[in-house]
Length: 415
Image (tube, helix red, strand yellow):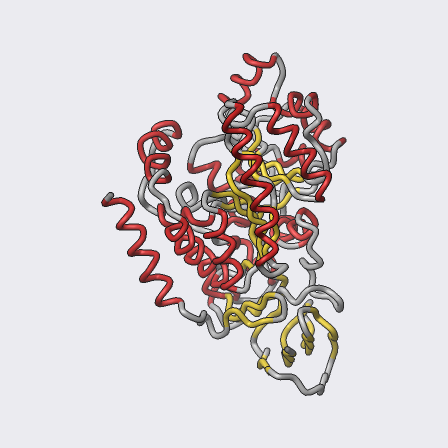
């Protein structure tokens, strides 16, 4: 498949872009090669698509279901009881709704952890996106449950091969307070053997840190280092309640970070210490829709930047360009993707944004406008792996997805 984008704005210059197969093959003026699809890029700008570094995709089914509650009450009375009712089919439609929302807001890759692995994997494959997909690994310190989870992950690792290369298997230990030391060590060993990413919640709340100190006489990062868990394939999500020593340990082991400002603000989890974490590779994520309540990376960039400025009383901290990098090239680095930039040889994962959108005018600075002013309505075209997933803001089968997801969501709450 080939796509020729004519006369789009790239780095403030009118440019043609040729996509052949799944990569950007040529960038320049007046490219006249024949292509299967031609896109008129006038009044549009080309930017990299977004990478969502932490999601629980099928939680779209819980959007607006349980808001403005204290975390423990929220989990125990609303979220966990509903999740116990989920079937693979429910997760499939919830994940399809998530994929639809992400495509319409410019995201082509997400890092997911949730129940019923194949529901999410199948949705990603069908929707044409990329994702690392992990099953939630929880053993609650029970040896029998640990063996069951290990067996499941070994099986899912093999079964993932039936999907396209866009669906990437990852390991998903939930957190240090739900997974035993022995299971965490097996996960690290299996990751090393098979070159797999590890997706884990880390130091999201003060109580998590306090409990770890009470149990192990050390903080969470120190504990993970002691048991040999840390390494460059670990993606640590949230990472809020960290000491200076823990930050140095994370940097020493080249651990990657997924920052989730909207979810953290909504659940009153705390403030990510960005100024001290800048030397690590930090990407941006939304978390699930039960705690955000959307998957819009444009909004996430704005909140990330404003939170840091407000909390530190420093308006120069996390400028728009840094927030944008967190959502694009940093995300690509975290997940080993050959993307995040518009360059020849890079994967054709990119967006066309509508320069006539009111939020992008006047055009003093496109990146500033995208981070501080725009919303998902400015995304006109979404391309992933060299295929058009959305054009003129229309996605295939979106009406059916909305209908089915609503049906599933309301049936769940009636059970």
